[in-house]
Amino acid sequence: MARFLDRIWIRFGLGIAATVLVTMGVMALTSFVYGKIEFERFHASLPETVRVEFDLLNARDLDDSPRAIEIYKQYWQGNDWDTDIYAVIIDLLVCLPFGLVAGLWTSRMVTQPVQSIAEAAHRVALGDFSVRAHARVSGGEMGSLVNDFNHMTDALETLERERKSTMAAISHELRTPLAVLQARLHAICDGVIPAEPKEFSRLLEQVRHLTRLVEDLHTLSVADAGRLSLHRKELDLVVLTKDVLDKYASRLIAHGMQAELTLHGDIPHIHADQDRMHQMLNNLIENALQYAQSGGWLGIELQQENDYVVLSVSDAGEGLPEDSHGEVFKRFQRLDPSRNRATGGSGLGLSIVRTLVELQGGHIAIDKAERGGARFIIKLPIL
Image (cartoon, rainbow, N blue to C red; front, side, top):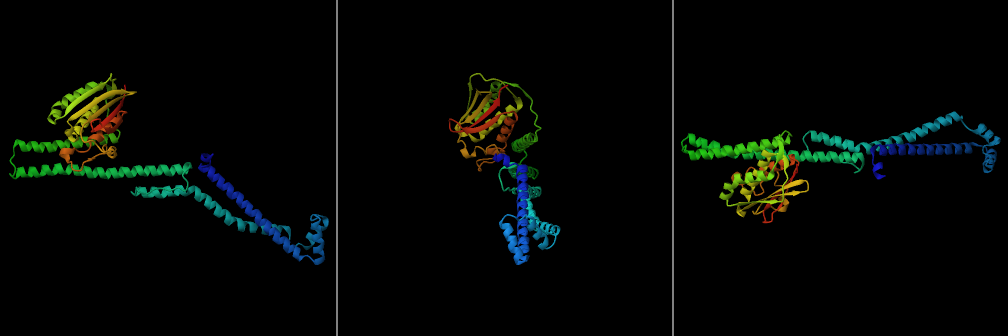
């Protein structure tokens, strides 16, 4: 019942009906008072003997008798038509202002959320995403409209904040390798640094870093635009995981890390993009090499859970604080401020992992591994 009464057309209709009823009541009261005043004026104008006779007729409930009507006709000043006109004029003078105020209050009650949204929308159009609309009531269509508008503004404010943060991070990420390239190339041209293969290798590493950064940004921007092409096919995740571990075997040994693959039962095939799955695993292993090398262990588990294949990538590093689990997937996010590009990457790897997982109908989460490090849990739907 409460939800029914919260509907705007119900509230508006009840408000108008209440306004009309109260206005009619005021009109009736005004007419009664005016009639009472006219009767008292008529009663006072009667001669003493006639007044006594008239009061006696009223006391006997004979106020509509022929004699009473005769007294009315003889002593009533003016005609009935004039009296009715005066009564209508007085009713209008009293009821119109009251009805106008009541109508304005009713319309204000209904349209106030719309006006608030209009004012807020104007400020949003000017670039102020901090403004919010307000409603006197939280229920009904208007309350829902205001709440939805505020949610939309929250999203716009978050997107604008992320856009500014991303632009600042991109410029920061590009400035350093470009500055290094420019300075060292100037030094080579001036003969300060000898032009030798070792120096060219350093410059090439800066170029590779820029290439990786641009490729990562391109992947995320195309995914945000909904144009990232996925070539899905039947995929054996066990074979793919073994292939990726074989590719990283020498680097894992060089970093003093032991890789361990654990299979829990038969692992069904999934429907996914092979290249993107390679990219996801590459990013997760790169993350472990950069942040969890001290633990000396990398564990990958595969198992079936209902209609999903669960891929877990764990390490034995220092782990992550629980309050930072939602932050690691943000772009250009480095939880350790002391890390630079060489030790901490660009901060886009895990963002790409989450994007690729969600585009393929999966989910990703993070918790604490059994050996104390971080564990990334990816759920992908079974074929």
